[in-house]
View (cartoon, rainbow, N blue to C red):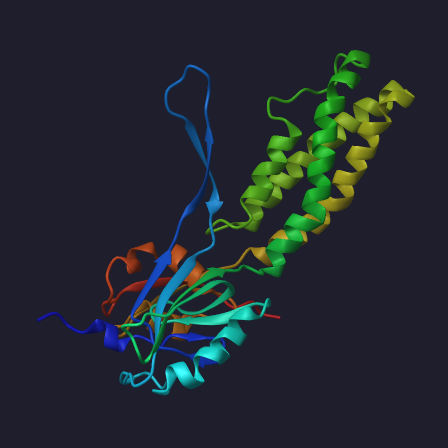
Length: 308
């Protein structure tokens, strides 16, 4: 007989309401873009990042059910729990979903369906779904202000580069466009193992190329080159802020070794928190998701807490 590993999991809870579940599902997907060409079979598929995790659960709001060992919900589910759940689900702000396997995850409530069946006289069945939300302020700041300003300036330099070369044939010309170089910087912010020094070097490279093009524009002494001069100044002004933002986003990875058999939820209780979300823990330790039990002696990677 197989071990009852599910009895060791955390109870299911949305916000402050603990509820029973008869079935649950977690979905992890990639956001893919398919580039197709006329007359060419297949497509070149580009991975633009991981989509937010989605969670669904079947909730039996039936009076008289008995709670499990780790559960504390009351047996009068339909009478006294269904309506508070509807109220909690109707809120638009973020809430904590306590997933039995993955622990606490910040989510937005997505959909709630209630089915009444004449054959079930004790209440109703509820289907609910949630979507993980990422409010990482460090990454949001990187994408919002200095990076977006530098990205706009980079595109301007690409457009204006041809104009200056018509005035100064010896103006520097690079194989990689400014926009492409900036996209590599922005696109790597949320990848596992980001290194601030690596991206700092890429920022320096963009600034150096922009300054070289700006100096060539200055030598022309032409009013027609003002878009280039302006774009160069924008890149220079925002480069330091972008370095600081990337340094905030770059986090050290710490190793933890499990001392006894446990679950991913148990590991999250020990190493998770503000520095490492459950989704990040999964991304750093994909091998741990393959089995329900994480054996003693397993190596776990997680992000170190920032030191103020």
